[in-house]
Length: 215
Ligand code: AMP
Image 1 (cartoon, helix red, strand yellow):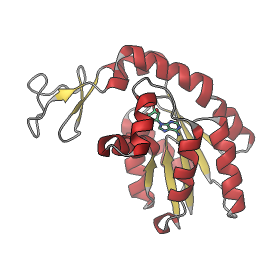
Image 2 (tube, rainbow, N blue to C red):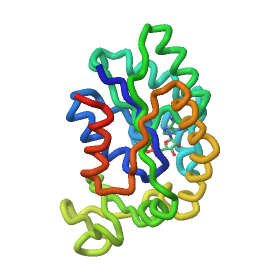
Image 3 (tube, rainbow, N blue to C red):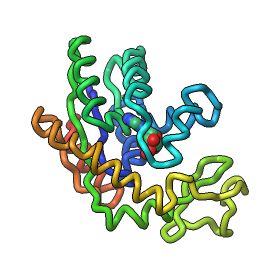
C-alpha cells in the first residue's frame, strides 16, 4: 500500500518525479493542476471558475478542491494507493483530507517534500516553454527547440504558459510560502514527512525518493 503526497515549491520537479513514482509503484498519479487544466481546456463550469485564479498564480478556493480529490481517491484504481501531486496545498485542505481519510479508516504513508531554493527555481520556471499542440516541454536555456518558437516533434507553436511569466512565478512563490509551506511542519509533527534534496539530477532525486518510500 502506497498512499503518498508529493510536496514542494512550484518548479521543484513534482510532475516529472510523479510520473516515475506512479510507474514504479503502479499507483495512479493524481495531479490537481492537471485536472484543473483539463477542465479549463474543455470549458467546464469548474474550469471557468478555476482559470480566474490559475492565471494569476493564485490557489483555487479550497471548497472546489477537497471534494474533487476525495471523490477521486475512492475510485477503484486507488485501492492499492495513489500519488497526490499538488494536493493538499493549504492547511485547511490537509486537515480536511486527514479527517476524510480517518472516516474511511485510511492513513497517508508518506509525504515526500522535494526541497529546492528559489534562486534555482526562478530561472527554471521563467525559462519554461511548452508546445501548444502536443504539450511537449522545452526550456529556453537547457532544452530549446531547434527552431525558436516551433515544436521539434509536431511543428506546433512553442509558447510560455501564463503562469510561468516572471510576475506570476514570483506570486506563486509568495502563495507557496504563505499557504503551502506550513504543511511541512504539519506533516513533520505527524511523523510522515520525507525531505528530499531536489537540487540534484532528476535520477538522483528519484533514487532518493524510492529509498525513502521503500519497496
Ligand atoms: P500546478 O500545476 O500543481 O502548479 O497547479 C496549477 C494551478 O492549479 C495552481 O497554481 C492553482 O491555481 C491550481 N491548483 C492546483 N492544485 C491546487 C490545490 N490543491 N489547491 C488550490 N489550487 C490548486
